[in-house]
Image (cartoon, rainbow, N blue to C red; front, side):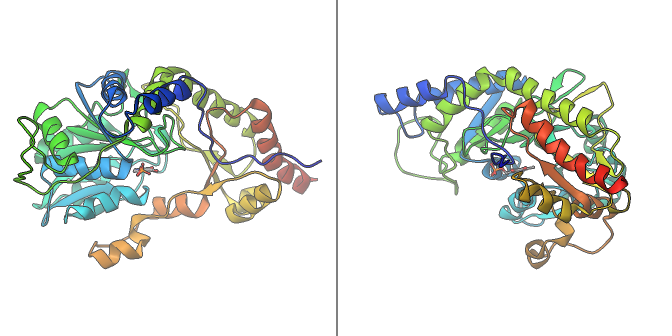
Length: 380
Ligand SMILES: Cc1ncc(COP(=O)(O)O)c(C=O)c1O
């Protein structure tokens, strides 16, 4: 029997997306001015529990803009996790500063807070934790360290919309935070991003630099005091975003339910493990359902399992390659020496399985059966 192909992630656009985007087209408000941009910013700030939000055109520029607002520049260092998506590091490079890597924690896969202090120098300006797969980092420990060394904290919350620690949401811990709304994210606009903060000054600086440093007040004289960027989000993208925020709780619950099904259906398979998620203080939003494959115990390596899934119509992706293994960062001048054993283990053994919010229980069953069938046939 031939099965339908299961992609690694599909957006779930079953709310008011079409209605709002149609309204934007009908009324001619398709550029960056328009009511959907302001409504999307307002509702997303409210969702995160922060005072201000600035919509931008993707998550990578959200990170860059946040760093610009903080005044990070040449000669500075920014602490980032070694285990992250490349955009985290590139955003630091855009400012002329240098990213400095810290290994992941073997249980949470997030930046290991206990290994951060040894990387702080007199040039360090900021810590940039990334909430990997939608699990918040150890923000109390990071906050304590930041206060001790007078550093800024910028959360990369690209994967963590609605994630919580003791009821407080991602984006509300740092001085400033960045989100992505790429098509595979828990909330999406296709391409899009957001900078959020409680700091009025950082908010103003973000707005100013996002729009080519046009003055925030007064008439349009086409005189500019600083070099800015065009990082504006369109009203069309924001229309989709507003409809997504309206369903944020529902979409979060779908993601969490799918993860629970994966855990249940894959439990007991030797050599297959998940990111640890047993601390009741944390609410994980499971951007992606990632597993690690121990070749010895499972009897097949990660790459072979991915091939097997692909041959059976199931898409998957490898986990990120560590920053210390990135040629681009070595060429830029980052210190790529040293050992990052946890990141290496994650990127050598890890993959993520189909994870779209709208995935059906039958799809998840089919995926898990495929992973289990190999193991049981081996055991016979
Ligand atoms: C941790 C992290 N940071 C930043 C980004 C960049 O977001 P975007 O693709 O919207 O530029 C991503 C996107 O996948 C990400 O996972």
